[in-house]
Amino acid sequence: MVVEVKEPEEVRVGVPRPNSPWQDEFVRCTVKRQVAKVGRRGGKTFGVAIKACLAFLGICWGCLGEGCTLCDNTGRTKQKRVLYAAPTAEQVTKFWFEVVDTLSPGIESGIYKKDETEHVIEIPRTEIRIKAKTAWNANTMRGDWGDVVIMEEYQLWNEDAWQDVVQPMLLDTDGTAIFIYTPPSLKTEGVSKAKDPRHASKLFKKALEDKTGRWETFHATSHDNPS
Image 1: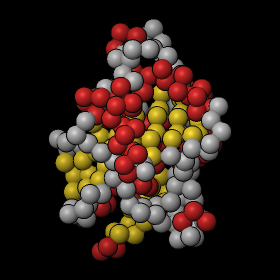
Image 2: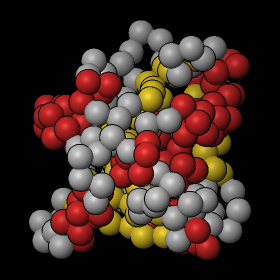
Image 3: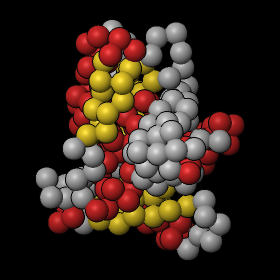
Image 4: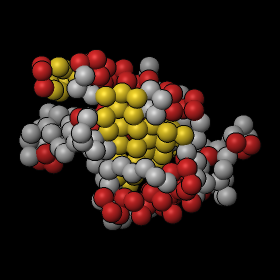
């Protein structure tokens, strides 16, 4: 099943539906700070790709376009600028494949402009776009911004990216931060840029204990992805 949105010139873009219960709960989440702890091959990249495409298209996360109180029963929201970042080119490639595949009708019709070199899909003459880049610390995150910022494999990041760049950026835009991480393993220790190898786990615990309603957590294992 897909969520369809009709763009000008009768082009229909279909966004895939979540394919597992945890993905559905995650994709529909609308709080400003979201933290997902997901096992290997748990469907995390597919889930964030769905959220990114919905935000870019202006489809309400809460109802997946069906209409709810959050969107005044229109199924639509303001179209957003999405910044996705991950510490490895391999991870960026996986996300990029999913969003290009979903948005291909709009790309092929010329409604959206795609830059394969910069990994950008945008609506020309607007600030609405999806950008995917490799990043792992404050320096590699500077120079970009988004209404929605997705940080994947966050356990491998240096903590200064969030503290020094992303958090202040989102205060200016009242944007949404999405942290996706896999519990650290011996295999990843050598490539991690983190000062504290447990910083992502500590962030998850802090979010889990939050009472303000601003944070939400999700947990899925490798067995929770049916695809």
